Length: 113
Image (cartoon, rainbow, N blue to C red; front, side):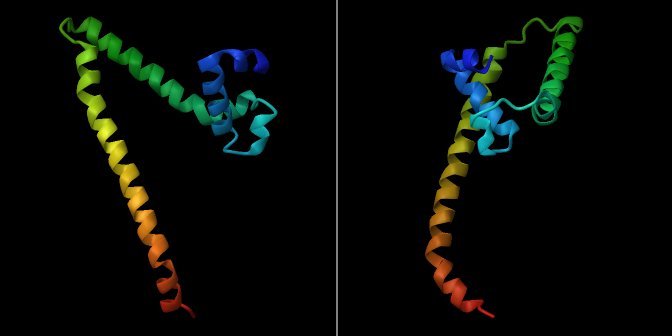
């Protein structure tokens, strides 16, 4: 099954990334698929939460007669904020890393025992 999934272009990449996540980065993820129990522990809780919250949202939309809700507007309104936040965090991490590496030798001398 692993070889069949890996041959599908996008699904294969997503499966390999998820399998590495389930194995917590252990290199054994390159040779074998994680057992179901590991998948359940690492991904199951989040997946179950997503399914339940999606069901509750659909239930609320249907039973409260909310007919003018447009998910495209919500996505287009939120996506730029998330993208900007991600770019900002990445830029901060790169700048902070450069500063830490530049100051590391002077800090080491200052805090020697």
